[in-house]
Length: 306
Image (tube, rainbow, N blue to C red; front, top):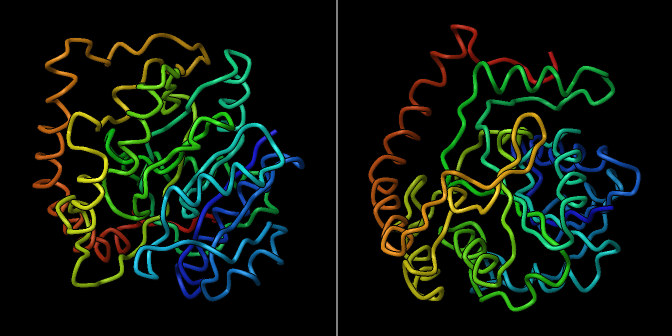
């Protein structure tokens, strides 16, 4: 079956609600699913015991703060019970369509990397997983009031064990480490499958920690630029659009028509796209924050379990 692994913020307030939502949704995919939660953040041990997760308190961190990608991926592959793993941010809620996408990919070939675009959705309360219709209600909420992010927002990576053993010491939570993962798979000759059309990955909207080096929506933060320097520049940057294949709504795996093969476009398109994102993303996130109260009054923000 499948092993999920992740790291979390402290389980307090809204962060605690949405993280429990995400983690519990993964556990409910199948009785054989394993979930590993890395880190000793407040409430992590309690949440792990409550939800039946494997808790690994130790994490190697940059300056004692943000986890290193290479540690998480290496350690997860060392201890996982299963041959397929999925790293996901734990604010992502997944349902059976994601599990079905995985099964189709596994039947397609043994080695692959599966990725997906996310749907940013306002979820403010615990999801009622005892309701048989919770997944349908959340899907409706996402499709009617949410926003599907573009190909630069990569919150989950499902891959065959052994694919990412030699990951660079990049920092989770900042830009470019996820872009490099796609480049790494492609450079290794592994097929990259975009399942965005088939499976709905719901990202529960949340606030961002305010620190001197952090600005929501920016890919020019100092630690993001550190990641960029470590990966070796734009030629080692790819995104979801560069997937070799995609999973259609009907469940067919076909070559990805969006992938551009001309060498100069392969090299310089990511640079241009990230330049646009650095200008547009702060504007978009500011708009979402400013209009959230208005959207709530107008009924555009609903409870996930209503």
